[in-house]
Image 1 (cartoon, helix red, strand yellow):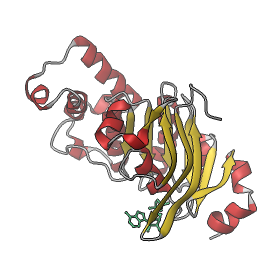
Image 2: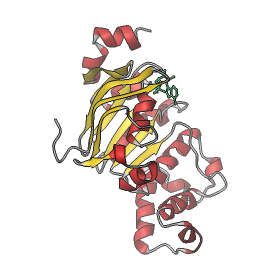
Image 3: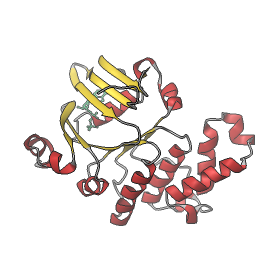
Image 4: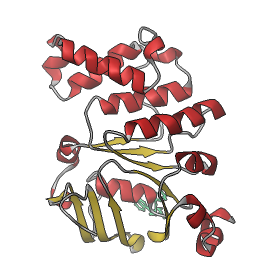
Length: 248
Ligand code: ADP
């Protein structure tokens, strides 16, 4: 399975907290340009898996490689972000008292250091990049509005846009559609598919309608390892998945 083109490779990853195995020999592969959904019951290890990938938690056992041969277990969180892994947590954390455009400008300057945030003037290329992100996250018409005035769903999109400003090759997204309207949920599926045209995206979600809309390969975790993996029809008909997750 592992080859030089593999973007993310987890093999036999285990981690325990006070003797409790949160991940139990977990293996997981993401290819470049892939959009993948992760499902599973509470406590399955989904968050811990994201923590391992982003360097927040160290595995007790197993391998984690990015872009073929970069050993993520030897890098800290800041280095891993720099290497091109972005993570969106469940709660949006946009700057409410800044406009949509300024939020994206701040995100673009984040990689340039604190003085850049204060004094850097955007180049034409930077402005084109922000315009492109605005279109991707469906906020072009809201560019001059304060983030505080956005709907919950639009704030989630803005934060995804802020992560895109860092040009991640892999974007990890935690429960993006929780609390969204049905229309926003449907739009989020299209939006993530657009984003996955130029990078890989791993999305953790409980909303099965949304997962079905995505129409991508699904990995179901339970008790720290992969219970089933494949199309949503394959995974949702797996007796183990029904017993451990869907049937609950
Ligand atoms: P999920 O995201 O699928 O709900 P988690 O990865 O959050 O699952 O949790 C997996 C298990 O590991 C849970 O039983 C949780 O209580 C435990 N766990 C996760 N992080 C920690 C931690 N930092 N300290 C102790 N236990 C933890």
